[in-house]
Structures are given as C-alpha cells and as structure tokens.
Length: 75
Image 1 (cartoon, helix red, strand yellow):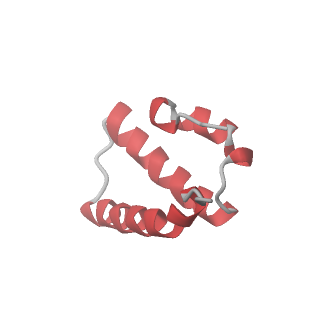
Image 2 (cartoon, one colour):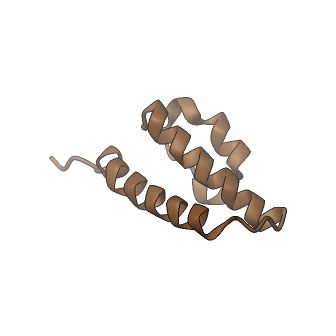
C-alpha cells in the first residue's frame, strides 16, 4: 500500500494511522509536530523559538528512528 502523506492533511494522515508502520510513540511525535506546523501555517501561530528547536530535534530523531520502517529488502 502506498500512502501519499505529502499530499494529505494532518487529519487525513490520522485516518491512516493503523496502516502506517510506526509504533504509537513515533506516531504521536509525528502528529504533534504536524499539528504545530499546521498552526503556524494556517492559523499564523508564532511559536516560541525553543518550541521550534524542540520540534526540529524531534523531527530529526523521528526520521532517524523510522528509516528502518521504510527500507525495502532486496532479494
């Protein structure tokens, strides 16, 4: 199954949580980052600098921790 998350809203991504190959904690981190990004983008929210740095660090950790979920085993 291919899920086009780059073309989806955060709410649409939430609907597919059960088929995304991340554990509950990983999904929670990802959803938190996306929701704050949505607030910045659509509601013109201006988060504190520290929150931006925390989200950046959390995003980097998320990517590093989830890369194995997407690797395709060659035969």
